[in-house]
Image (cartoon, rainbow, N blue to C red):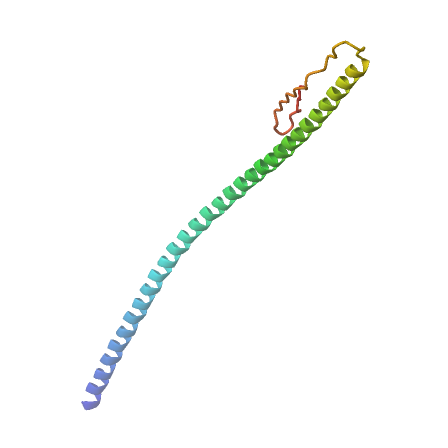
Amino acid sequence: MAISSTSSVSSASAGVWQQLQTQQALRTAEQAEQKARALRAEASAAQTEADRAQDRARNLRGASSQAQTVAEQARRGVSSLESVDDMKLRLSDTYARIGQTVRSAAQTAAPAGTVAVTAAAPVVVATAAVSTGTLINTTA
């Protein structure tokens, strides 16, 4: 009888041990599933953030391109203004030389005892509308 009671205790403890192992395996599986759900949620959030970052990068590239275009137009405008200033200086010098020549010619051609008429100093008026592709109109 001692053998049969020992074997029934042994088989009962084996059943308890089996049950403990099963419960431990179930807990481990549940923990793994929770971890997997948390990681999926984190991955989804990271993907959403990455998509937003890509959209922002695309928008920034577009804004950068527009800013570059504006900068190039501004440089062309500055170059045009510098050309207009240079042209105004050259025209002013030309008008001054013409005035000097006219005054010289008038003094040389005046008969003795007459009053020589001299030309007044020239006045230069220049206007320009500068933007990309616009013809510069200078009026003197």
